[in-house]
Image 1 (cartoon, rainbow, N blue to C red):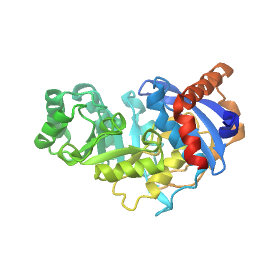
Image 2: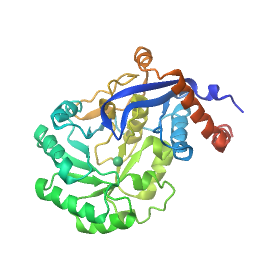
Image 3: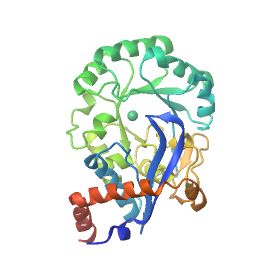
Image 4: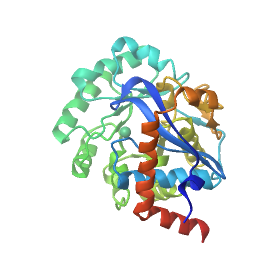
Length: 329
Ligand SMILES: [Mg+2]
């Protein structure tokens, strides 16, 4: 058995403050390390348990140990992301996504959040809007909220992301609303499901490099689901984002802008070269930690130990043996 230090070379844990409160996260922690193929990132959200975090480790190791898939394009179109912020901060946030044609807005309901949509459209009247509900509505609430959104804003919605969690609710909703439905949690929290009836309850699949388990598994998932994919991220640093960009750039079909510009929500990214947004696109390049910036955002020794122990627990649950077997046989 290899020593973990040899597998996760130069393991570094960073803690980056976010500019906004995004899904409750104000400081994003991530473990960065490198392998023969380059730098990689392991960063499941801290509340995730070991079995939820295992695909993230699989993705992280695949990108450290195997070359990227063949890229079919050099750049990837990205969407802006608007978390729940005070209305007077909307333009400050949206300015960080120059040239984006689409904005994804996190919403709880119509009453509290329609002003966010209004402010985004004030910023750019041409924006296509994605609402992300994170499964927060039951069928009745979804119908009511979406009726109001449609009435007020009309045909500006590209899709509604995970309006309900229950498949039965999504299926019924899809028959009733004029908007497309995207699924995220329905995929992420049930990776092993049979998605053969996905077309009955969704139009678009949100696919993320790390929670899917990396390139091979993500592509397998896309094929099984059979819906157009939007490659997205999970508030990764520029290292994880680079792998998301590669996943997007390697797709033979990519019909939607991707959720891969979220480092704009950080106080700073920690990589070089930085992922610059040009005319709503980002180049798919491998990146590495920028030593000077990493030193500024190093996590405390206690947090570093926490992340090491987290990796060890997953590793020792049988994952490590399986991975090494696949790797060296
Ligand atoms: Mg989502």
